[in-house]
Amino acid sequence: FPSLDVHLQDCKARTMCGSHSRGSALRIGVFGPAADVQCRAVAREAAALGADTLFIEPDALDRGLPLSMLDGRTLYLGEPVDDVRGFYLRGIPAPYAPSLERDGELVLYEDWFTTFMHTRERASYYVAWLLQLAHRGVTLVNGPHAASVMQYKPFQLHALRSLGARVPRTLISNDPAAIRAFHAEVKDVIFKPIMGGAVTRVLEGEALGRLEDVTASPVIFQERIPGADLRVMLVGEEIVSSVAIETPEQHLDFRADPVYSGGGASYREVPLPEPIQRFCREAARACGLTFAGIDIKHQGDDWVFLELNSSPIYLDVELKLGHPISRAIARCVVEGARP
Ligand code: ADP
Ligand code: MG
Ligand code: MG
Image 1 (cartoon, rainbow, N blue to C red):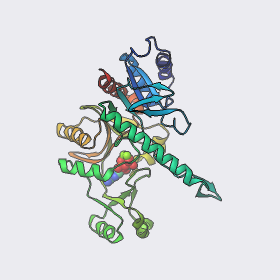
Image 2: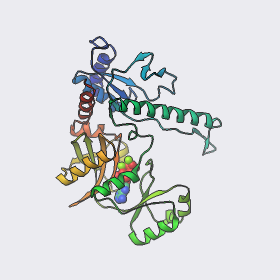
Image 3: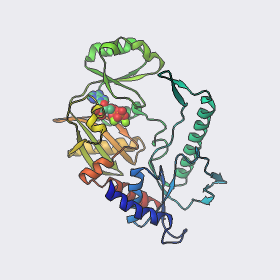
């Protein structure tokens, strides 16, 4: 995005050198990679609102950069950062066990345990640091329990259902007998992991023959819902964007379309009826999300909620339709950061 990059260079120059002396200018924080296009877009919009941006990069600890909590104060790269009263959180790195490919198979790296334990400590440090910021009244978009590490689809479905929003008939289970019974009753069934990270698939053929595999960890099974895939962007109380994602071919999961993964998706604006907007706001609140990317299946009068994403990718919609999502996030963080 060349034109965006020019703006960003300006913004970076302001952010790093700053025409204001440090300590007097309003600063917001971005907990995310300085090279991430969404983080940069938010920083650019914050600059337009008169705030400088301090990036704290989530891989700082992997790189051994100094980050300390000293008697309740935070020092990053040796400098105090406690003046920062608002953060945009792009994502907290999750613990992982490193693997490598050997003879075409993925195997654990010999020293995986050490790396795994380090990544676990780092994740715990970040979450605890962010929790104490939230506790001190710092604005976090979104808070640490919502900003990745873990995703809680089963809780989101519960929250949506208890608000009265329509969700697919759902079984979340590691019990092959329960899954067979659900499939016999519902018939057209899809499955997907609790944590995401895999394309949704139809429960049929080979998958039906491998149900014993799920005893190791529960999987989400759902009635298959027809209709368009909507993505709603909610920031605070405002629905900033609401679009149907359109790909040339029909897929169960639109991300399976090569045109989508190649950046060629197009979007059609879909206005939401007031009750559906209310479900979006109330569900986000119940899930502790100030900023949410909400997935809905839509056909006619039927609006069926699938999930709420706490750190959704949105820049493609922003650039193609001009929906001011980065601006809304920046406004929320900057307003929250003001004394
Ligand atoms: P993820 O976190 O992986 O995005 P989603 O629940 O949003 O999880 O599922 C991904 C996509 O799969 C959805 O956007 C939709 O296209 C499709 N999908 C998921 N659940 C269903 C369902 N019950 N019926 C029809 N399509 C579904
Ligand atoms: Mg989704
Ligand atoms: Mg998701």
